Length: 180
Image (cartoon, rainbow, N blue to C red; front, side, top):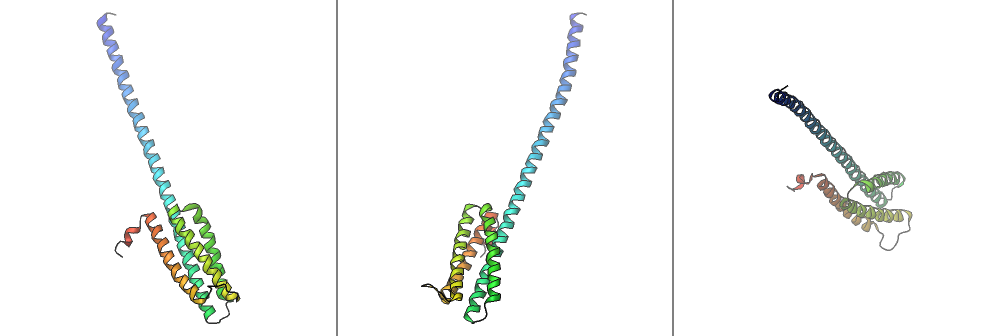
């Protein structure tokens, strides 16, 4: 084999190897691209799932707090009408228990800013609940009165609105409140 034949042969081999390598490298790049796209899609799916779980937690917290406040209000009205408070007390106990369960879950899920507002509301609900129960039991402390409970309940509704605004803002849904 002379030098010219050898050069032609090597050029052909290099050309074939280059063509094969090009196809192989293109395939590997496409595989990596598909893998990155799958990973991105999985991250988006996980983010959506987490956002939905947080939204569900917020809905449950808002709903249970509203029910607890409504039960406290009904309890206060029953006390002022000198009605038998057993059925209203039962509803209040159930609403309180439900709220405590939801609040406990929220403590593990919600961001610090919302948790701080929820904690303040939780504390205030406990204070009002204690006042209402002491009034019902006939053992009020200094400052316990129907008027104080009623005023505190009005303040609790305001605290609930503030917590709900923070939850909506965290979910990116506060733009609906801009026109108000």
